[in-house]
Image 1: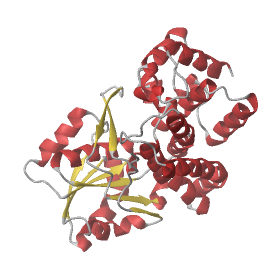
Image 2: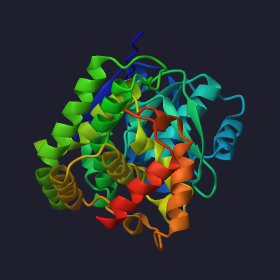
Image 3: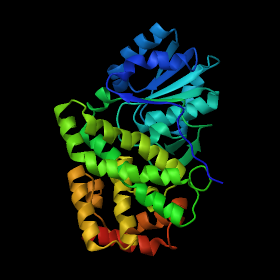
Image 4: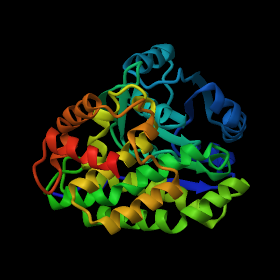
Amino acid sequence: MIVFGAPRRYVQGPGVMSRIGEELAAIGNSALLIADNRVLEICGEVIGKSTEAAGVALSVIPFAGEITYDEIARIVSALGADRPEIVIGAGGGKTIDTGKIVARDIGAAFVSVPTVASNDSPTSHIAVVYDADHKLVGIEENRGNPELVLVDTQIIIKAPLDLLSAGVGDALVKVFEVEQCIGSGGKNVFGATSPLTALALARACYDTVRQNLTDAYAAHEAGVPNAAFEALVEAAVLMSGLAFESGGLSISHGMTRGLSAVPGVASALHGHQVAYGLLVQLELENRDDAFMRDMRGFYRDARLPLTLSQLGADQASNSMVQTIADLSAAAAHIKKFSRSIGASDIAAAIERVEAA
């Protein structure tokens, strides 16, 4: 059995935030906006005006900054008996994932409004939950994918380039993980066989990122979205999200179990963590020197981490490497690989990455 999941509607372009009211009105009559104070400064007013004009009642609960079970419970409790028909998660991946589970817990539709293109969480139905120290502690699922994903590239382009590079990293890894998942007979996020559609999207995602990076980064520097920037955002948010959920994951994402447990590295952006995880995966795939040189050159152009120190580690000690390897080896995604590997294989691959 194959399963392909996707948002009901995806809207992207400069200035599309101003039409969020009419988009929401097609879903329900009342909405809760979850966003941190910075995001509320950026888009709170335009969302408020647009929803008012469309006749959608809007309430706001500020996001405290980390997706934890306590934060989810706090927001649900703050709502009391006043349950909106729609929950909007606006901001980065933490806010969006928090909104997914709040929506699930109160039985509301979920709308995703990313203000950065740092990862592909906006399109998915899963949420990664951390503790207060940003250690990964659980994976939760909403009842389905978002009803709407609205991506205003005029807002996205104003976010720091470091966040965009994380989105590039998260998108870059997908083709390698989907190929490994399918090749090993692994299951996708829905617990089903991966459809060929997901593999095609993963390959298109990789090609789009490689082809548009330079011109998209130039657009970011100029502060004006161009065709390359739009393509890169679509790859980072839409293509990448559809590819990973329906295609499946492998070592690159499995590595986050270990990387998120290391001080310094734990605070690195998700897209940078999985980009480093891809280097480990490629070593385990025994890619040739020419391939690895090309990939490392792209990493430098994309401003992606090539070492643990670039991820935030003080020093890549033997004990740190072993901790990362031990925890990563226990991750379910590690099994979706062409051969069986253990902690010693991962540790050796990390050492080769560090020595390059």
